[in-house]
Image 1 (cartoon, rainbow, N blue to C red):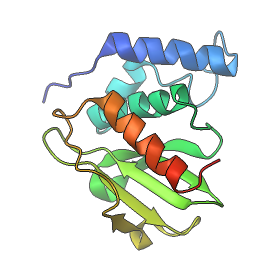
Image 2 (cartoon, helix red, strand yellow):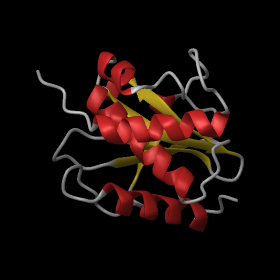
Image 3 (tube, rainbow, N blue to C red):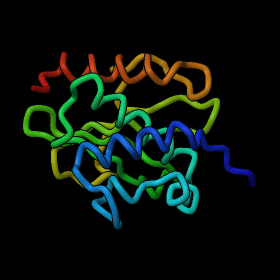
Image 4 (tube, one colour):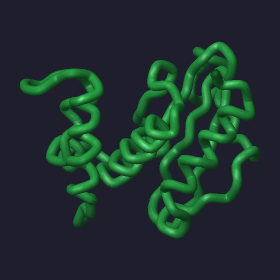
Length: 149
């Protein structure tokens, strides 16, 4: 199977992350080591690349980094952008395979991922059809409307 990654976009994101956290060399932090080469070596690399891009777009839109991370969802064979905070509990936007719909799962803040419930609160977004910048703006709007500060 051939993995298709937008390496230029991932380099741009990695450089921004390094500048944000202040690491200029070495392995740095969890964000710094996510270079295009590192992403390409991981399972479900294309989904991870989309999650990293979506996460970076949320930063650019002003969604705070502190309650947000990119996580692997082993049972779904994908990655997700996850927001965990007192105001919202856990919101997890899972990255689908190309041509499939994104899914938002919600649950209590420290719930087992299997206890999360799929939400119908999101618009229908399809990977490859809908623009990732539009998805990021919509997701940010949902978070703000739900009370994220």
